[in-house]
Structure formats: structure tokens, C-alpha cells
Amino acid sequence: FSGFFMLTILGLVDGTVAVDPWKILQPGLNLGSFEVPLEANPDDSRIQVLKIDPEFFELKLYCYSEFKDKQRTLPQWADDFQLKAVINGGMFAKDLSTSVGYLKSGNHLNNPGFHPKYNAILACDPVSKNVPPFKIIDLTYEDFALWSNQYQSFLQSYRMISCKQKNVWQPQEQSWSIAALGIDHSGNLLLIYSRSAYPVHDFIEMLLKLPLNIQTAMYLEGGIQAGLYLSDGKDSLNNSKTKYPESVSANNGNNHFVIPNVIGVKEINQKRQ
Image (cartoon, rainbow, N blue to C red; front, side, top):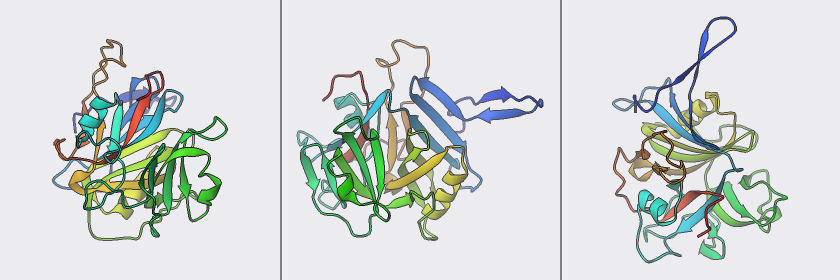
């Protein structure tokens, strides 16, 4: 990913320059590639972030337990449901279907049980415009019951950054690739991926220091099954000359892993599936 895209150089008043890490893909969709100080040999030591404006895009949860016509990879989820981007929808059990935490997508209930150690819940599909289009509920400080009737879809997993903007992951020695989800202070969604392997605690520390304006974040998946897929955008870009890679990294360039539950980013003006 060293040649992932050219960085924009901005001139400052004092004559110095600052590097803008964001590439505008289309209105409401920016892609950032951040080189981080902690080396991850032999990989690229970069964190990729897709920043999504809820004015243009919405979140949907998709489960194999609901759509059983076939098992799907990340690109297949994107193709079959006309999604702009797809990321892991949390970790799953040995049956290759059931989420290890609470998971509800609209009227479909994948797992009704709440994991006692998972203190973050992604809420999306709001029932009204009186609440944010998506939210990470921090169960350490917030009561899920206050939000359970405000949204239609929920995904439970580990917290990474609490609603107090604190790193809540304990230090560790093990490292792996990471897929995560965050929300910034402006209410934008951040889909976060590192192919480079890092201890999660150290990864979070780097996220907090990046120019993401990140407010809160939750863990989605780790290891070779973690991935973030960005579709080629031919239709949504309306024949724009803007080009960008199809895969923002999936499993060292491989997209053949079946992922039973995913978070999909869908353009609001598209016909709902």
C-alpha cells in the first residue's frame, strides 16, 4: 500500500507544508492512508480509514442466517446488495453463522444473547430522525434499554475507545491484523483496517494520535479474516475519472474468506434491499 494514493500537499501561511491524508472518492466518502510510527515488519505499517458522511450513506447489517441462498465473501456481499463498502460484522461462532455477541438486523435476530464481556453495541437503522443515524452504545456508561427502541439493528462487540475517549484495552504481546469501527466528533462513520499486525492496545493508542477526531471505537475482527472492502464505484461515481483500488486490503489481497455477518455502507439514494 505504499503507492496507495498520492498525498495532497497543502501550503501553510508560514511557508511550511502539511500533508492531507484524505482522498475524496465522492461526496461524503473519503479514504485516508496513515503511516504509523510502530513498524510492523514485513508489512507496510499503515492504517486505512474510510470516512463516511451519514448525509450520503447509511449503515445496514447483513447476516448469512437471514440470506441463506449462499455464503459470501466481502466482495460478494457488496455485489449482491449494491454496497459501497463492507467490513466484518463482528466475530462469529464455529457454526460460521452465529455472532458471538448480540446481533439483530431489522426483524431478523441472529443472536439474542448478550456477551457479558462485550461493552460496545453498534446501533443503526434508526426508527426516527430524533436520534443519530448510527451510534456506539458504551454499556459501561449507558443503558441499552434507553436505545433499544430507537434503532432496528444492533451489533455487540468489544470496546476499543470508550465514550470518555479512553483506551480500554489491556496491553498485550500478541499482534494481528485488525478491522474496527469508529465515530468521530462530527458524527462521521470511520471504517478502520490495518493489514499490518499490531497489539490491539498499541493500535488504539495510534488511532487516538491520528488526525481522525475520533470519539469512540469498537473492535470487529482480527487476523486473516479481518478485512475492509471498497467497491469500484463505477455506478456511484457517474463515470468520474477518479480511480481507487477495489480492495482497501482484504486478507493480504485475498478476498476468498467467507464472512457470515457484515456491516454494509449503502448510498441513501439507492433502492433499499
